[in-house]
Image (cartoon, rainbow, N blue to C red; front, side, top):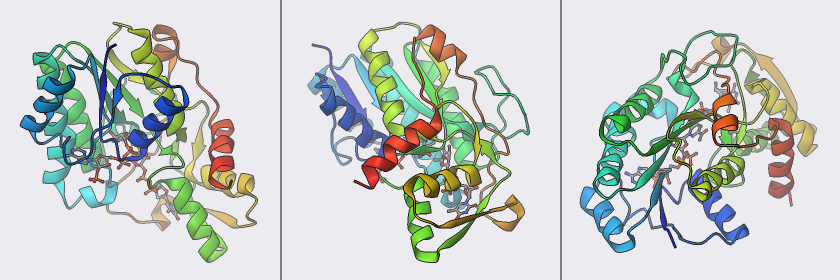
Length: 285
Ligand SMILES: NC(=O)C1=CN([C@@H]2O[C@H](COP(=O)(O)OP(=O)(O)OC[C@H]3O[C@@H](n4cnc5c(N)ncnc54)[C@H](OP(=O)(O)O)[C@@H]3O)[C@@H](O)[C@H]2O)C=CC1
Ligand SMILES: Cc1cn([C@H]2C[C@H](O)[C@@H](COP(=O)(O)OP(=O)(O)O[C@H]3O[C@@H](C)C(=O)[C@@H](O)[C@H]3O)O2)c(=O)[nH]c1=O
């Protein structure tokens, strides 16, 4: 039975993967602790590869604090670039397929058409730059990789926009949310299921792919839907980006075209509002 090691197992996506694996009784997945699976510790990764002889490894480990990264560039690049490079190097040496996760924050333009895998990147933040550096280094050392760019992840697990917006709504009764940044909220459980499908298929159509839920929204639309579906009665007011200053700049438009993953890897994708309903029903259970 082929094995898959998940790095970053205690993060949001790592926990979603664990749940999908348990729910579908998938065999061969290993979720090592953060301490024994530090992607900056080459000897530790190699020890896991020797111990388990995996066919795949999934890199869910990342530096994801977008604003904090602006003043912590070295750590962001260490984890998001060097960590990815360490995994890719060892995957190459041990003939392991790497599934790596990247972000819509590699984009920064003001496009108004969904961005595909060939669209020009222009990160506006240290986080976006460090993730792009991670994407770029992998193909220099490894052929067998899937890089999945996604965006606006949320779920029942970890810290995310849905949980923050529910919490601050409850505390304040009225919240203000940016209405001029457009993207797609993506349920991390859906992404986790797509990853296990790709691995289960044994596909060798390696490369860069976009994955997000279907549809588009502003952060205001997303926050409004969260409170409407949860039935909280909280008022959500739209504001421009200028009224919510943050250390890191975020893309104005980062909606992704998912045609490639749908066609090449036969992945079906749910609408963002349908998936949000699923998540909220679990969160409010
Ligand atoms: N969250 C989002 O909205 C989006 C995320 N992504 C990408 O998806 C992936 C998963 O994100 P998500 O699960 O939400 O992020 P989280 O921040 O929830 O999880 C990241 C995990 O990586 C771990 N980690 C950090 N440094 C290391 C290291 N050196 N070695 C091993 N593990 C480490 C963290 O552990 P600890 O906390 O202990 O440091 C944490 O558990 C990332 O690549 C991210 O860039 C892409 C688009 C949107
Ligand atoms: C909490 C809050 C946020 N906002 C805005 C700020 C920001 O532009 C947007 C999202 O806020 P957050 O800081 O929660 O999300 P942020 O950390 O920017 O989310 C990003 O995380 C990284 C890891 C990714 O890869 C991206 O795809 C994206 O999901 O909403 C408001 O307008 N009002 C609010 O009350």
